Length: 246
Length: 246
Image (cartoon, rainbow over all chains, first blue to last red; front, side, top):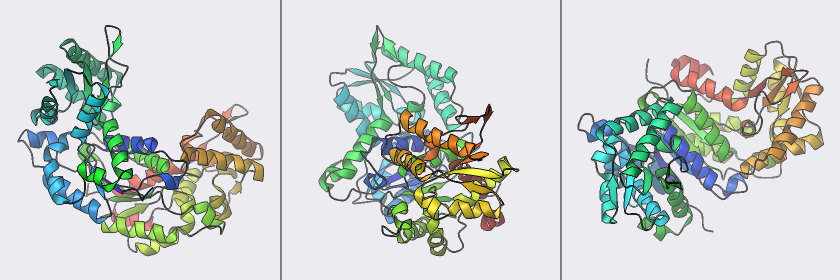
């Protein structure tokens, strides 16, 4: 095998999600000794301005900080960039422009591809995501291009989703939050969702496949973190062309 | 509070240990939102030459690579360096020389200090560590300066410890490995150890406090990863002087 590419992680949004991505990346790497693992550079910068506030037009844009992180990671040796935060992908162009020639693997594209691979005949998915990810239509547009309807929680239910996500960020995820999130997920399925998308990197810490069952059938839960881990491993170890196309 | 220092992590030795340190650092940070967390730069470079082979004189020195990582992290903005790998501390001088003026928090010193704080009257500790950490006497000397005897496993038992550590690196820690390690820990206590030192950053993944009980009393297990997490948080958030003295 030719030398694998060094991975640069634009992280800290939030830190638990970056830890989760890094842990899953290491655990998914086929390795029998340290030296088989991939080199991973992480900039865990939790001071990036709030993505939701920025998308709502109520706060400063995170774009300059994301661009700075991308440039810093490339200067440090990153040959492939990832950003384990869905909402931040509203500003993905700033990352691409800051690091021309370095492949950037989109978390959104990875998740949509993982959904279509897992449930090829799916007609509608339920989106569990932040307000910012929903209002920037990051998943709506990608799924609609694939002919899949994207269902979202009601306004009141969405507050439950946001409260659960911010509880993870505060290190205060509880069984009560999990149950409330599960109820929102079940409502999406009753409304027609045939699969659920954990479209926020904090959500895998709250909702796992097997926890939502409708009419005796486990509803597939597609995890954006897992999808990005798989694409990252493939691109880091695959030929340069594969990474560039991604 | 003045701005906290950016932490640079010389990592990848092994990757699971770096994940464990990062996860514990994030989890131990008092925070109610992303922006309360610390900026952490991680260079997870698993290709660093094997520390045990180098200490045994049977492989290349990791020192040049560690120095390169230290310089890279400082160039990227690190204001405080840590290295969550005990054996690599045999080459800590290379890190200090590569980053003059940037505090380097020794994992060994942090662990010895945590041991004396936790068990002030301890007369003997049992060292669970790699061959390299033991033969470089990283803990023997530090504990002896504090008047504490450092007990080590027999040659055959030490092979059990090494097999357990390398199983973690290979992602193959099993209940059998855990039980065998626990048996070695119990033998150290029978030989007089009043506390056990998890002096390898892979070991917290295999042995936890509460698992070794002698004459009905839980034997304290001092975890080098936990000790470094606490010192890192204090130094990152404390006054510049504290970090510089560390």
